[in-house]
Image: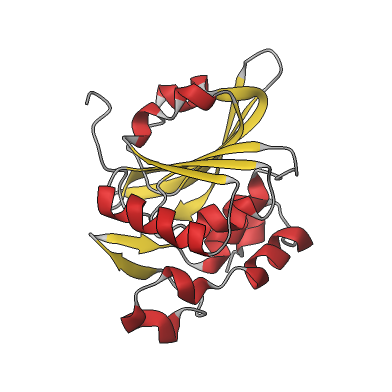
Length: 205
């Protein structure tokens, strides 16, 4: 049986990433009816047909961008705000887009109540990114489009990293690691099969 590290090449997760997972209270990001399951390594429903990713996937995607203290990161798919909080523990600023207004507002209030001052959440279509604050050192996408949105590539800083699940759930999705070099050339690597909710919203909207 192949292990995740066989796909990713990561022998162990970065200790700073693991420390962020230990610090952020996952139970605060899930509905009360599933809080007993908050610390299982499982995705959980958060309403509106959306989920909070399993902690290992959150840790893996965070580790893959190699977060630095002065980074500015774009997150597509705020959801409950859990991945957002993990990122905010490690970087200077997180901008997060959520297309479902109710989830965006709830996440904004939750993150503010937990004391995060380096996060800005906005409702919006993730296919178009958030150009006002671009370019980004890294972009993390927590829902799967059927293809890589061109706006996200454009908004990635030279030397930056994009981590994104791509594909249709019933036909298979792949977690992709995309790097833009200093000349703007793109290198794409498929890491492992995953199962994410689809990225809502049309690229043409």
